[in-house]
Image 1 (tube, helix red, strand yellow):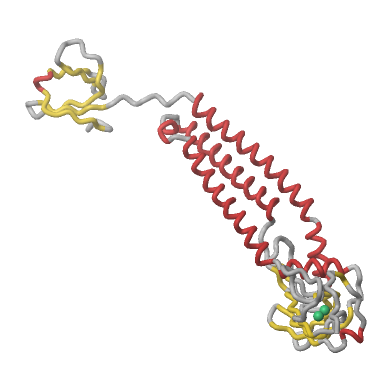
Image 2: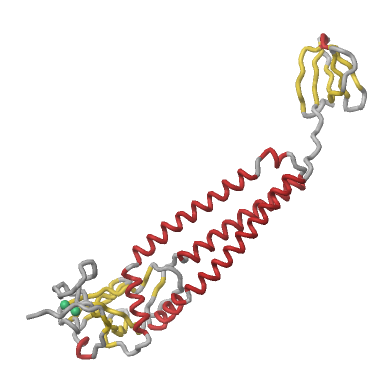
Length: 312
Ligand SMILES: [Zn+2]
Ligand SMILES: [Zn+2]
């Protein structure tokens, strides 16, 4: 007997062909088994009610769900590609009525859901690889986020900030924080646009299947919007960084406070004050906090100590 040649095509099924199919709930999956309507070989299918896909919303009220089933029979069909899945290549839609204790199978009655159920079957069979490759890309995105902090901290040297008056430091700090936040937000938006936001989606009935499929088709529009938002945020972040650099360059540094010295003399007395220009050689001249100036000959000095304030 010559086996049916392999062909990847959708077929229509009738009640007699799926009447012998059995289905049962197993956790988040429905397990189906029966004879392929095309090649008549035994086959089975696992329909996931939940997909770790990218984007969409979820709810749960088990009801009627249209599912796409592909023949996965183990028999050899001529012309079957070596790298493809098993089976004769045919796929068809079934309507499942899912109740907690029983699942009944009948031919699908809504042709509009053919494409949506095919897309769901493909998404749930390829989800491991698609989520993993998205995760790799996201990993690079998170690395880029950390890189931003490095960039910002190199740009804003601690010494140049410390020299600014308090109001200047606050302005630099705020502008830098805004720049880093906007840049981080821009990176996240860009990655969302490129690879989607990882979410877990549940599809339990035809309404949820329709909603999931509609959301999936809207991905292109949403990605374009997110990419536009990412570019605007990146530009705003750059503007904030320019403000930071401008503040560092043009805000005059706070006047340096004059150094205070405390000098111990040979007679055990102390003199404390700011150093002022000395007119006599080999001596230090200090102005005391009261305003009075004292000349200390070098020979009288036992120790010199910089201090923050003179003892009252
Ligand atoms: Zn077969
Ligand atoms: Zn088949």
